[in-house]
Amino acid sequence: MATTGAQAQTKAEVMHWWTSGGESAAVQELAAAFNKAGGQWVDTAVAGGEAARAAAINRIVGGNPPTAAMFNTSQQYLDIIKEGMLNDIDAVAAKEHWDTMLPAPVISSIKVNGHYYAAPVNIHMPSWFWYSKPAFAKAGITGEPKTPDELFAALDKLKAAGLVPLALGGQGWQEYITFYSWLAQVGGTDLYLKFFKDHDAAVVNTPAFRKVLTDFKRLKSYTDAGSPGRNWNDATSMLITGKAGVQIMGDWAKGEFNNAKQVAGKDFGCFPGFGPKSPYIIAGDVFVFPRTKDANAIKAQQLLATSMTSPATQVAFNNKKGSIPIRTDVDASQMDLCAQTGLAIMKDKTRQIGVPDMLLAPDVGGAVQDIISKYWNTPQSVDDVVKALQGAIKG
Image: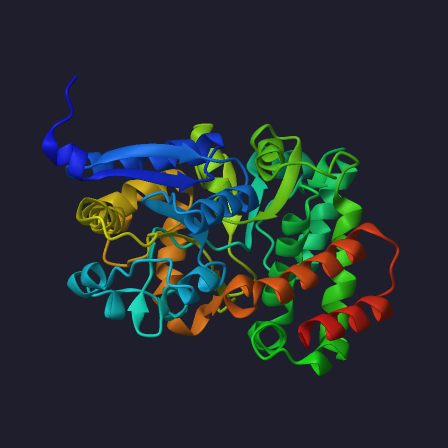
């Protein structure tokens, strides 16, 4: 079939790392919206976030960039902005009123020196607690845990019932999510922000922070021998099949439940933290647009930014991805119980805090993650990990 002139002008090669079942279904919604708007989506998927980001940066630096490349809502792309290697999308941001429509933590990540350099496609909250309804029933757990103590009691019951209480993929980034989720949801917003935002080394040695570290390590006793090296979606599958009870993971896990035709509130449960004012950690995914002077490529970039962030695309994509839309003016009735909960919380700005990747430079964040993984996987004392974290956070 011959390619039309319009398609040729708006062909876009899009690099991303969405390769699991739920992720693949979700990215197809972005592609369909772009194609419907007159574009031609060319898919380049690279498994693994670090590998995909490295491949994108290598191509950008090497002078053979894709039209758009995926990053997290973070500081990951600040260096290529400083080097002048990205096009801004200010025209789309102005037309779509991003200054007033987007949450402040997202704006602070994608708007640099007064210019928008990335199009956000979702808001992920990495600190959701997921649980298998059949596993809870088998263990005799009748209610959703409302406090940390109730969660530990539920984990004990799951263990007694011969199930895996806590499904965890033993990889550094997953252990890190478990840590900062516990810090935010149990230690509280102030403790979390003093550490990640203020880089307050003294707070690490307070009784409240030390208790977070102790309870975090206690969670390991509820994982199974197969945990080390396990992928996150394989851990989610343990809940889907009723072999495990609980998983602490971002709302991308919901994409796997959805892909397995499971229904929130019926087959699985979800809660974003403990108590009505628990912090809602904002993370997510964005697409950046490598520098080009080619008018057709720039047109494709702006069409991508517009189609990705439109209300209808936001609902269709996020329903499959498990995340929630970047905008609150969407029809929430089309979304599931967990997403509706997230959207309602997002309207309370006092509960919004940025993910650590937004608050720490990549090298500092990497050092903290390495310390947490060592603590999780070795018999290291709380005193030793306190000293290590204090050294790292001073940066």
